[in-house]
Image (cartoon, rainbow, N blue to C red):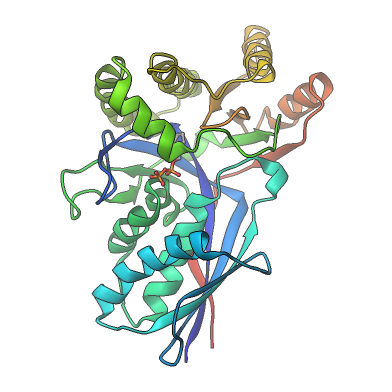
Length: 325
Ligand code: 2P0
């Protein structure tokens, strides 16, 4: 029995993924662009066991219940079909995404699982094939196979919906600060929130068209040296995504009062000359994009104004195998 351990880092979208075109194949309505973060990751060990009678799943040392294990089994079924095996597996995962970080861990979780499970099953997938496999577990996981900056092409079928690294001008020296305003579980999951938005928000078609165009514009902007152009696109993509939920029926929002207060703070810091832009995902927390030159000043000002833990992140590495035994 080969036990394979993989590590994958989380990512934050600069241009958001919000809405599926196909929920079975996990094809998104629009392409998206992200930055992989060096500070947060998941490590997952997979061992296929010909004698096991079911898959098992242990997360942070705790044996998981039927529901959580079923999500893993559905994903492993795809790996088993590719590898032509019927063996069940033991899956053990450790999240180095502090619960208090309030960041989604499904991206790093399914990216690590895709790499560990495919390797343990004897598959030798290319980096691009791995992004397609990870996508089946969670859309944003396709972007966590690669480090640095990544585009996930929406595609039109399983083969064409993959992620790949994009070139970034090294002089940009981007940094992302994760600001934790609230670490409680969100009320509406991303999956449910995007499904409701697609089904009921009249803003959705406009969002999908604008986000597709913005993804390609972002890839171009990342090769340049205009931080303000990139930052403005990042903040606008987040606000446009959140506008779609406000127009859903019934309407909903992930914002809390502290979210808007922090957004305002970031805009005020910018008005005083700091290179700083905000982004928000399917929760109340704010991530702040800045540059390496300004990051300490930004961190100090955020810490002085907010009673919230702040983690400074640089671009992180590719998903990798860290142990095989
Ligand atoms: C993103 N989010 O681009 C967007 C922005 C949240 C807001 O990808 O249903 O966990 O597993 O494909 O990837 C979170 O959604 O959803 C997400 P599924 P996922 O980062």
